[in-house]
Length: 394
Ligand code: ARG
Image 1 (cartoon, rainbow, N blue to C red):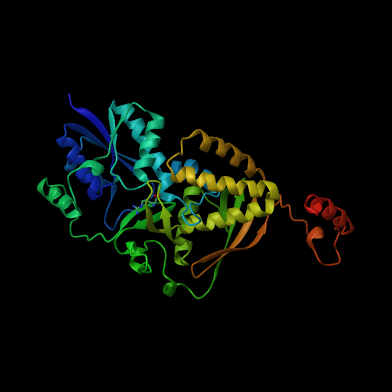
Image 2 (image 1 turned 45 degrees about the horizontal axis):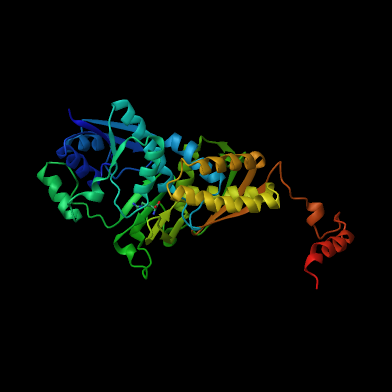
């Protein structure tokens, strides 16, 4: 009997070759296509992706819309934690992998497959994220990474292989970049971007407008949160997925959320990647602003250290680790009072918080004011400073 493998299938060149390649190694290939809001190419549909998988030799194709689960269970905890890797990357790709891994394992169980497979190369973080997650969820499953071990040395060789086996791949499309996209953001690398001394060309960006296209006027938006969860834009309630899509559109129009990062990969390589994350940037800015208003100093500073660790855990593929789970519990506890409203100004690629309010605000104007309503007892400061500085006096 043939062995069964569940492959994470995107419809692209690598995973299409992988279907055939696995089949030639006597596997029955079941393709799993995760819809994380990747925004299919022009004229492309999931039906077409399914057709391509079947033409490549898949026995079966599962397509699942995971967008709601992605934003609720992966994006939202990361937002509450203010997770940002190396100060510039809001982790869109990294957050998607453990979710795809979860479904690969689930499908493998359902289909009684002994193996799962992915199309990652041996140089990136995604292979680590998939394999560590799969290992945590079911260590008995074999993991196959065809791209890491196969004989093809170039994109051209892969195309030739597809043509030879009648796999319908769009060979006319020149692919200048490697792109991974979902509803939380776009990651773009390779091609001309490998030249660190060059500014990324405009055509590298997918969802944000360039400076020259920006409107000359700023745009103001109000984002309301309840316990750390974004609920409303300009007073109108949205489901999280819709709220994010909406902010991607608005933010993208104002060029918000671009970043250009020389990044430390887990496998020890430094690489240059550019990112677009309009909604993520707006929500991250607003959420941090509301925390500034509602968290006390010690909690706030401690939480910053947690944010750093949290971003590493996500980036390193340790989503399902005990530490990440424990940090989630901590972060959740901190969100109790993160309720209120933040006004953001979007202007020529910038996103800044310009106004904020909360029923749990810790700001006391009668203490901070320099006006005549001042209630702060300044005479107490003298004794406080003496005792505070005492240990250091010579
Ligand atoms: N460097 C990012 C990460 O490790 C994105 C990886 C995928 N990027 C891509 N352009 N295909 O999370």
